[in-house]
Amino acid sequence: MSQSAEKKLVLFYSPMSRARVAHWMLEELGIPYELKTMDLFSRENKTENFLNLNPMGKIPTLLHGDLVVTECAAICAYLADAFPESRLAPAINDPARGTYLRWLFFAAGPLEQATTDKAFPRVQEVKASMIGYGTYESTMKTVETAVSKGPFLLGAQFTAADLYLAAQIGWGLFTKTIEPRPSFTSYVARCEERPAFQRSFKHAQTLIAAAQK
Image 1: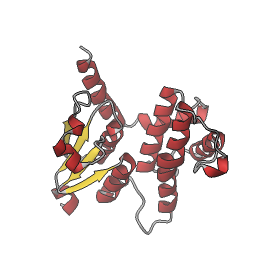
Image 2: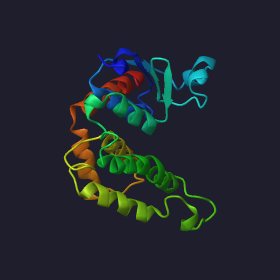
Image 3: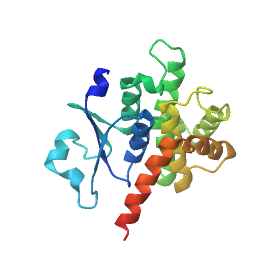
Image 4: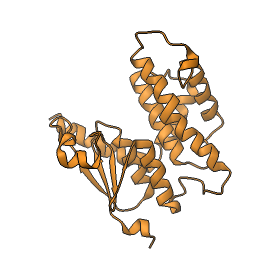
């Protein structure tokens, strides 16, 4: 048993948050973990104990033994490397790792910034050269090019970068901050066919349904 597998994994979770992405990632690993469901409405994530773990008071937050990992993309990257047997990330010496990291960071950076600006337009016009992602149109074109080669970003191998990017595109399609281009909808559908996604999705929907009763 690896040292990573010997340490307890705990994910602070809410079905109404990005923790659903981290939960999907844990399901892909196929290893034991614990979900600690947080009630965001009662501000459980703003208690002193939780703020000691994550001063931002944000979900998801991952504990792996005594180690704290925050930021959803970082959690996905960390877990992929901590459990290499899952084959969710190319090895350090694999040339494909550069492409993997490229799209994982693109999804967490330019894509999220572009869709946030789409949802909440800036009051003051800013030159494209002054914004990290440039323009919304160029960002969407870049993502479309990446997912059109398929079936996944690295070809046949599904990785944590696909998981994170599909989650970002899926949320954008749901909130209408990303237009439903055929390449986007088919890519998300391929990723969401995975049993790990289906398990995490079912869990979230069960909790949401129970809260609405």
